Image (tube, rainbow, N blue to C red; front, side, top):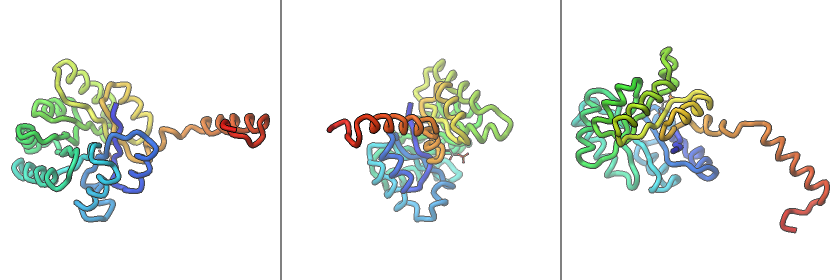
Length: 223
Ligand code: G3P
C-alpha cells in the first residue's frame, strides 16, 4: 500500500522522506498557496528533495477540458520525472482525463465523493481516484464505506485504477481505509507523524536501555 505526503512544505517533506518510506507527494491549489511561493520553482524544489522516481501529483485549475489538457501538458513538460496530473471529477474534468489517457499522460481524479464519481473516472482512464474521506464524513456521509464501495467496484470490473484515499482528520480513518483495501493513502505530515505517537514505545525503549546499562555500564552492543 502506497503512502504519500499531502503537503508542499519542503522541510516536512525532507524530514518525512528521510525517516520513512514515502512513495511521493500530492498537492492541490490550496496546499500550494499555503506555502506562498511561486508555483513551478516550488514544485521543482519538492521534486529535488523527493527524487524524480517518486510520484509528484500536481492539480490543474482550468474549467474547460481543452484548457485542463493544456495545463496538464505544460506541467508535464516543465517538470522532469514521475508526474501525475490531478483533475477534479467535473464533466469537463472527466473529458480531460479521457483525452489525457489517450496521449499517455497519467491522471488522478480528485474531489471524489461517491462510488459513481470514481466509476466514471476509472472508465475515463484515470490511473488513480482520490475519495475525500473526512470531507465525506463532514457531509454526514461515510467516507470509509465510500472507499470500500469503490474498491469493490474496481475489483469486480477489473479496472486498472488505484484508490488513493485522501482527506483525513485522524489516524483511525487512515487505518480503516487501509483495511478497506485502498491501494494508497495521502495524509498531511501531522497525521503521518501521529502513526508513531504511542507513548508506550518510548517507555519500552527507555526500559530496555536502562536495564542494559544497569548490567553492562556504558558499553554499547559493539563493545
Ligand atoms: O488530497 C486531498 C486533500 O488535500 C483534501 O484534504 O484535509 O483538506 O480535506 P483536506
